[in-house]
Every structure is written in C-alpha cells, then in structure tokens.
Image 1 (spheres, rainbow, N blue to C red):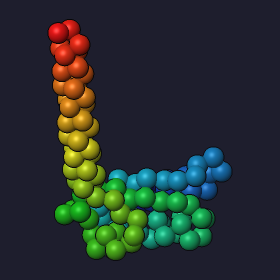
Image 2: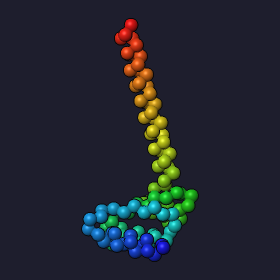
Image 3: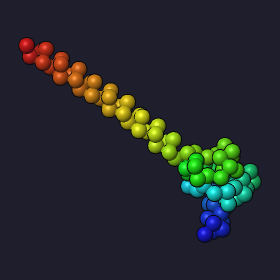
Image 4: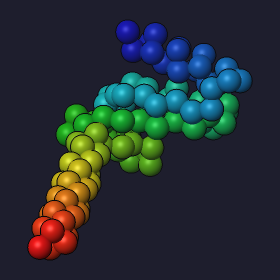
Length: 101
C-alpha cells in the first residue's frame, strides 16, 4: 500500500490543477516521493500525523504538522471564543435588566 500512496503522490504532483498535497502519514516510507514532488516538481507538500508515531525524517523535514498540537490549539481557541461569547451575553443581559428598571 505504501508504494501505491507514493505513486499517487507523484501522480497528483504532476497534475496542473493541484497546487498542494497534504499527506496524513507517520512513517518515513514517503520521504523520497515527498522530496521528489517538492524539489523536482515544485509541489507544496504538508505532512500531518501524530508526533509520537512519526519517524525522525518526517519530523525534521519542516513539513510535518502534529495533529494533536492542532487539536489542542483549536480547543483553546474554542474555549476562548466561548468565554468571550458568554461574557458578551452576560453584559447584554445586564444592560437589558438595567434598562428595564
């Protein structure tokens, strides 16, 4: 299956209507096809996976995005936005109560 994915990666990199490829992977088996797609074909490639399952070549490639870190960042943003919305709702209700008096 790894060979098929590597072939698809190169095939997609050759397509004129695709400008970037995101690969969800963790093993180093794809590093050669990724480098080929980037260096020889000019394709933008991003690798997403879990850092604890990723091989060192992927981690050191500069293309790797840790999914868990992204989830944690999204959760933090969600909590921040919810807190802001709650504060706005409380302020709006307080203003309404004051205006009714």
